[in-house]
Image 1: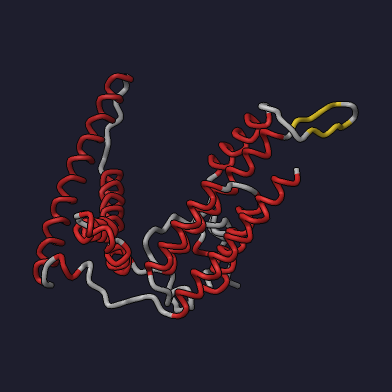
Image 2: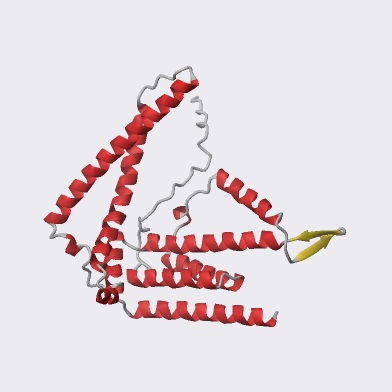
Length: 283
């Protein structure tokens, strides 16, 4: 008989999913095929809308749009990062603190008046933040980084009449977006390599503080060297491919699906604003 090996500890635990930025989800869909400028216009217009009309109806309407986009783009559940426990603790602490502020409406339970104004305000702000984060995540999940800079160059073309260097700004943004994931990976490798080094733990607190400061300085110096090396390699690659003009050049333009998306967003936003206005007038 062969003895069955005991399961490794922690194997059944759910592994935490990290935050993945600027990496599109594999696959093609109607949301993936949209022009990057359309997505940026939707994000900008919705952000302005929620800034001017941060009501529940407006937040709910935008949340429906985001959920519809997630369904159409076939975003898997695994794309969502795991929420750490300390964030739940901070949210609970913020909710309790806001609830102590009071405010209407008021409910009575057993002869005790409970003021829910502060708690509702906290829930509304939290929901608004989640909706905006979801909207930005949709752009990150369905858009290639290389498409953002050309879209910004096209959208900012009217500002060229004011002698604003739109193309140069678009190129700078494109380089930043492309270098950001590479630098994060490099920093993770540096941190992992630093942890693998043997480290003598001093006995006194002053020596431990000095050692921590020295290790931090070493990591910062190594990170600067890695950043300069990456910048030099990227500069050589850009020069070999024809210069920075190629970064902001893209023949993509809005199509019928883009105009339909803008029309749906405008209609939903207008309906939400109208409902919010009527609700405030009837109060």
